[in-house]
Image (cartoon, rainbow, N blue to C red; front, side, top):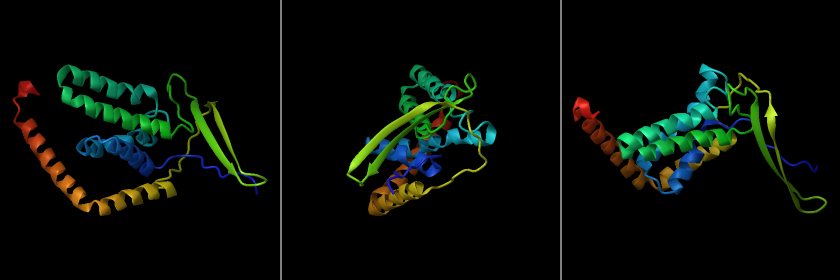
Length: 198
């Protein structure tokens, strides 16, 4: 059999969550920002509940505009919130990139889904060769009531995260303790601010 293996379809929430978080942590960004903000990597999938999946919250108008408005506001009011805004933008955009097998990027202006499907084939017979192709274009947005929660790849990412937590358990515990203390301290500071400073 000479057919290459093809993996298509939806990316599960575990992959949406763990992959960009590991990229940001490998870039040595502050884990106190990266880990709590990772929730934003899942936000676009809420459109399966409140609108048209892969359209309502998967389009550039929502995904880019909301964090950019927040970043501009933060730049004008308080520079400390610029980096969190950029991290949120990264999480939201990573979701769109991972879902490029069919996303309505310009919804509701253009309701069709843009797709980008790269393919890398590996063949061993009759000789060793690689085939690379990219298929792209617009197609009708497919709606499905089926939703993959965790795929094999998602389990692999979660397993990797658990292994990292076990191997670096002392560091992970110290991080969790310092994150809790940091959160409590900042909440107390915020609550003590005079109303005009908020």
